[in-house]
Image 1 (cartoon, helix red, strand yellow):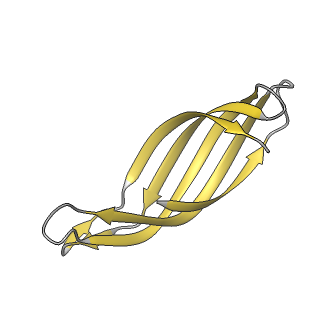
Image 2 (tube, helix red, strand yellow; image 1 turned 120 degrees about the vertical axis):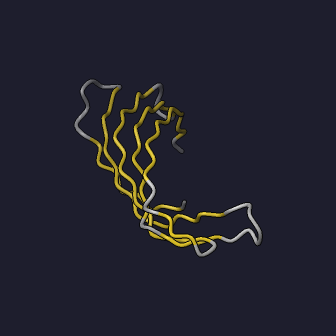
Length: 96
């Protein structure tokens, strides 16, 4: 998937924690390992909610929950219902 996202940071609960939400739109490609490696690209979207923790002026950690979805599509002449994926991410960001 390839998404363009927008984020909104809420006012800091403390000086180090910042909750946020995000929305994204883009494309999702479904590829199969069968026969001709057929694939299809369709509209994708996502919503995120998380919190970041400022470790220093240039580094923060984040934890977020993500919902991703797609429109229905056809791969190898098979109809595929819209996909829904729920996930969580933990990571670090470096600001420069």
